[in-house]
Amino acid sequence: MNNWDIAAIIYGAIALLTLLPVIVPMIRGVELHPGGASFDEAAHFSDTAKKRLNDHYSRILGTLGFWKKHSTVHRRFHYYCVCWTIVSSWLVPLLGTIGVQGSQRWLIVAVSSHVALALSFHRGLKIADKLRAFRLGESEFYDLHRRLLDRPHAFGKTQEEQLEAYFAAVEEVRRRVRAAEADSMPNVEQGGGSPKATE
Image (cartoon, rainbow, N blue to C red; front, side, top):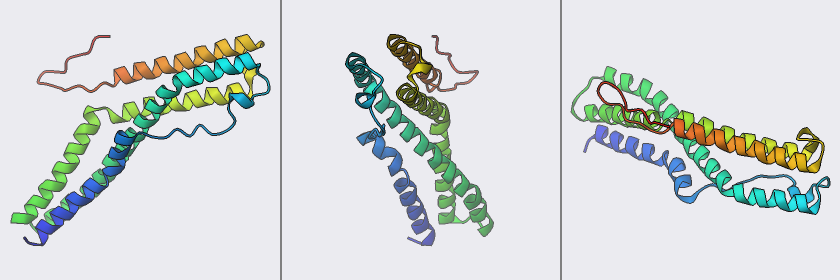
């Protein structure tokens, strides 16, 4: 085993280690951190309204966890691809100027193949589109949540109007995220074109 073989092994180990932050939330999930006061502390809502709001929040908690997990995974994988693309863009030409020989060729192949594979997954799984969808959905929900707590009259004059407008707005956010997720489903391009999914 020569120095180029050792360099290829070190490169592979670093590439794998830097992928761990992507893999860990896929397996363990991500903890939600809503922060701030909850509906129970909201002085401008009746006990009945607080129960309705808490019940609604408990039903959407699973969705928020799903959005958080996927936005974290997609964000980390996106930056994983960006960082390794930058590294390979100067590493491959640099290795090429040294003179390609035997084991050195395998290091160049390893670097190029690793980045090509990562970018293929990034493009095929539409990571950027899904990251945008999940992150915006999560952000929009918490914006609505805070607005209802801070400025309930922005949703309507009466308490009933406020709750109904809030529930409708949350439903709209969920609908948009589902639509964006469906639009960014992975596809495999073949020959003369890719099959289109029908809605």
